[in-house]
Structures are given as C-alpha cells and as structure tokens.
Image 1 (cartoon, rainbow, N blue to C red):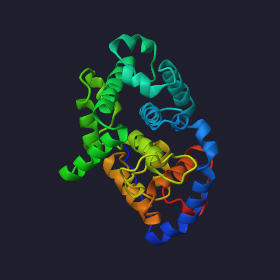
Image 2: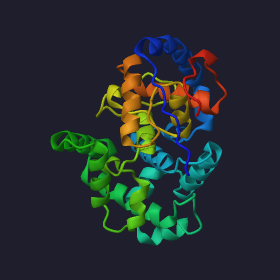
Image 3: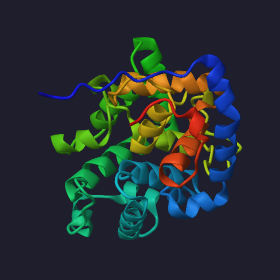
Length: 280
C-alpha cells in the first residue's frame, strides 16, 4: 500500500510578509555579478550584439538541466562548434554543417535537436526583425487567443522549421502539456529583467511583473518547505500559484525570488528555522 503524504500547510499573508525581509536579503546576496561566472547566463553576457546574445542565451537555457558546471561546459562546447559567432552561424547554417555536431550530446539533447532548433532560428531571423519580435508576436497572439503565450511560442517556433524530428519538440516546453516551462522562463528572466547585475534586460515585449518564476527542483522544494505553495505536483498550475504568492511580496518583479529560493536550495543560504512549515 502506498503511503499517503500529509497535506502541505500554506503560509498566511501576515506570516508571508514576516518572511519577506529574509528572502530579500538572500536575493541581495545571491544576485551579484559573481553569480554569472558559474551560471549559463554567462553566455548572454559573452556577446555585445543583441542577436548573438539572445541566440546564445536561448540555446544555453534550452540545455540547462542537470548540474550547472556540466551545463556551462556543454554550452561552451556548443558555442565553440558555432565559431563563437552564433548569429552568423545560424544565418549561414545548412545541412552541410550538421557534421560539426556529430559527436555532441548533452543528456537527451542531440545533434538532430540542434539541427532543428538552428533551422527554426534561421527562419525566424529571415522573417522577423529579431528574435524578440517573434516572441512579441507570440505574446500578442496568446492574449488574443486567451492561451499561454508559451504555447503559441512552442507551436509557432516549430512552424518556422521545415526539417526537424518530432523528438525535438520536447526541448521547448508547452504549458498546455502541464510543463512548468522552467527553462523558457529562465531565459526570459535573463532577457527581460532590468537593473540587475545578472539579468541583462535587453528585451521589452513583456513586463517583469508578468514573468513566472523558473520552477526547478530547488525552488520547488524550498517553496513547499516554507509554505509558499501547498501543492505537491510540479506543473503549470503550481508555478502560477507560486508566482501569485511571490507577486504579493514584489508585484513588479516576482521572479526575482528565484535567486533567494535557489540560494537556499543550492548555495547554502538559510532562513530561520521558525519559518519552516512543512517537512519535504
């Protein structure tokens, strides 16, 4: 017989605001320039041209699962195979270049997936001013259709590619399949948030207030431990519930608490034990 897990307790509004200064302090400690050197966001900082930066960031975020040091090493390898010139490589890419990636693999991310994503990016740049313009169109279509704009992005991205394997679609999440879309929202955090020593803020199509928190295992565990969410399933509904809670603390920039929750879960920062509500 399977053991029934106890119900999770949710933090009260008053108690939530008691927690806020501690989370803000950890945010301030974690969100510094020293964070960049160990994180895949470094690949956006590597380039001055917006197009290079957004391509490098998108590919880095797409590959960002597993240990950060391994992710950084594999993205660095990918950039080198693209001659450290991502925009020009994308625009000149043909099937003849496929052999460059023949021995490349990161977990389930394989050469065939790189091929499909590069062709999708190439067609986007041929038909839009830049990658942000494509995202902006998806955002508006999502509003018009009353659908998550990341679902529109998922579908429209692959409609821009005429040569990809079906398996490649899993590397770009779709909230209508229940995904938390952690990697896409991590990329958007990098691209959208302003006045940050880490996030570049080079895009403007969506305000920071509408960003959802990138929901990884560290964020999920700490959010439950401290009663920020009372739902055990890691899915689109849960990440929205968590962001709604964090938006009470910072209506203009709820995704900033990604730094605090990641810092507690992965970097050794601690909150006073009296704030623990659940054993997870």
